[in-house]
Length: 350
Ligand code: AN7
Image (cartoon, rainbow, N blue to C red; front, top):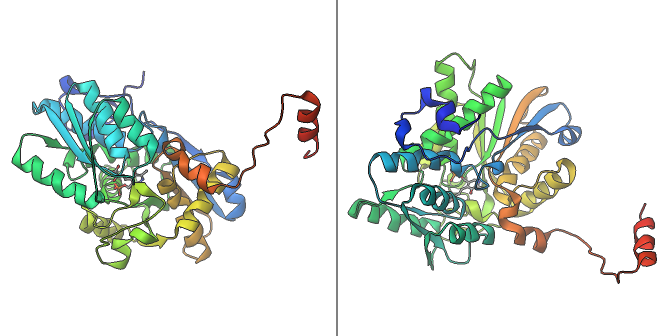
């Protein structure tokens, strides 16, 4: 039986087994994107669908580690700032571990599904009139001034857990040329880089995949090399103006011969639409930036022919259905329950 990523990769993770808190996270599907391949000719494309983790995002990978370690270190409470997914994961794992959980989120800028999760799992929720970066400042302070454990990705155990996604990719694919991923606070790009390097050292990988990170244009501090005081994007998960792991992201990009680029909200929504309609994969907008980024890079001639590319889908589409309902073109036919009318409606489009 699969029992979560700490057990699977315990050789690479330093945890006392007694304290493991797990929802059997990890082991997410790698899906070949055959219809996207028809559009981007000459590239082998895979989707790593981390939105199928227990709370619907990749954050569960880091949270199983951070919460297990919090127990091992006898902490009684955990806290995080969040654009939504970290708070959902912290609330779930914290509940399971019987820890007090406090989450600080930007008021109104968090997707409803994520807020609902924090409510359901019973976290204490503080919504501030400010953005993620403001929330993180308070979290850093209180975790220094009290015994509350911070579980943002500045917590090194988060990175440790998240690096296992790189292991899974290599265990499945053996090698890849490019890895496309969203960048918000830049913890995840740091984690993948660490994971790939550890596999390289262990001879499980021959060369580092090139890391292509993407930020939303309205929240692209690393791309523009300046803090964004009022970041704004439809991809609320990555609406971050001052990434905590900025330097580490630059190092990961540099060492892997990668790049970082900005993607417009319109390009994000196009990819969101394409993924759902061409591949049957519903991912939240921030995730779709990896596919939007691949399309942009391909069109700019940055992707070599016959290469193998993985796009990371970090979060589930169900997290933020408002984006779908407010931005997709759709037409719901409202009819009386009259079979003749229903039949006519169906047959006229066939
Ligand atoms: C779906 O939940 O920062 O670059 O507070 O939810 O490691 O920050 C979320 C980030 C990508 C960016 N995709 O990862 C939070 C939070 C999704 C995300 C990212 C996030 P990092």
